[in-house]
Amino acid sequence: MHKSSNLSSIDAHSVTTYPKAKLQHAEILRLNIIEAAATIMQEYGPEAVTIRKVAEKMECPTKIIYNLFGNKEGLAKELFLEGCKLLATAFQAVPQQDDQNSYLRDLGQAYWEFSRNYTSYYMVMFGGAFSEFKPEEESLNAIFTALQQVIAVITKAIEQGFIVEKDPLLVVNLVWASLHGVIHLHLGGHIQNEETAKTLYDRSVSNLIQTFFRNDN
Amino acid sequence: MHKSSNLSSIDAHSVTTYPKAKLQHAEILRLNIIEAAATIMQEYGPEAVTIRKVAEKMECPTKIIYNLFGNKEGLAKELFLEGCKLLATAFQAVPQQDDQNSYLRDLGQAYWEFSRNYTSYYMVMFGGAFSEFKPEEESLNAIFTALQQVIAVITKAIEQGFIVEKDPLLVVNLVWASLHGVIHLHLGGHIQNEETAKTLYDRSVSNLIQTFFRNDN
DNA sequence: AGCATTCAGAAACACTGTTTCGATATGAAT
DNA sequence: ATTCATATCGAAACAGTGTTTCTGAATGCT
Image 1: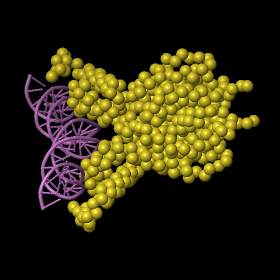
Image 2: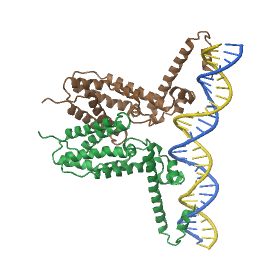
Image 3: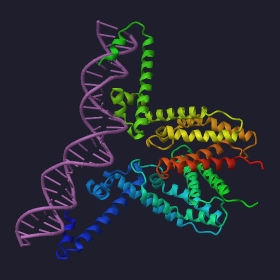
């Protein structure tokens, strides 16, 4: 106890730096709380993320979490944004190709693997795991950012005349919705067998590419 | 209080009919509880369905609900099955047509309207509104039954050579997943504008039909 | 009619998100 | 430096959830 009293007694005259140091401390605490929540979520699933468990892991009272995030929705939003970053990273890790068709296929594969490797994040972001959280503008922008590679490749394909449809976002949404549908039905237990789900997913990818990419025959 | 004591004192000698009457009573009670839960759900949403609120509406202790349904998951399952019946009815209400292409389009429209008119049921069935409930065999069969019209029309289209793909269930799942994806992204707040969502939905239907129905040109 | 069994129904338990409130400690002012 | 006001801390309480206990009462069988 009284952990910070030593720190604050180091120098008592630099008044202006005090709030800054405290804010830094608060920011670090904030990040640690998000990390703790993420750890619990990935280990035991989104429904295991309770304010009390996070507070227990952080060895702090729940009030601090409420001070920093307002309510559970605020913490959920941070996990949502964290997931967006992970998805963005996953897409960025896919090597670009001149063949837009093949590149889009690889991005689709990356999306599937993201849903497998970060299932809890996927459920928070797109599966409604935290029913209290609905994405608002900032969260929607984060998704938009995460999908940037997909948007880019489709935009390019349109510009180069490989895709007839003019509106890139329309195509992106159609692709996204179709693939999300397969993943979500699988995660929801409606398509239980994973192989079956993967087969459906790959067929969806192929069908979408066939639909949008004019095959010049 | 002692409501049933009058009933049971009507005739005390017909011993064999007693359990039957009681089972009937239990069955009626069971149906009333499901109806009460459904009413709460449709009025205030799935998250408002709590054992206590249902018990309060039924003016009975929560124990009775636990006796009849085991736990909340058991009650959720009944709502799920109820939703399947409603969806089946909605599909059956679509007039059959010889033109499989057009018929499938109308079934797709009915599916969209079901998700609009019975959003809570849709969320319970396919949106994971009751996270504790995952469909087991009986529930999966109920979905299969509800989708019967869709399965039939696709099977027929394959038999008649309009669809090249051989496996009807594969096609059904691909169609279902794509359309569910649009609906679910919309209900989840990722595609907020309803008009946009409907446009995407209609385009998905068109794309799917174009993909699977060989256009004889 | 008596007896065993079952079941109703209130209360309690364990857990959740969230808020309250007194004690504490902090930051500013004289 | 001491005082005062403010802000924060942190335990406890509140309201609500799913579920289980437990006692008294009614039920069904002998």
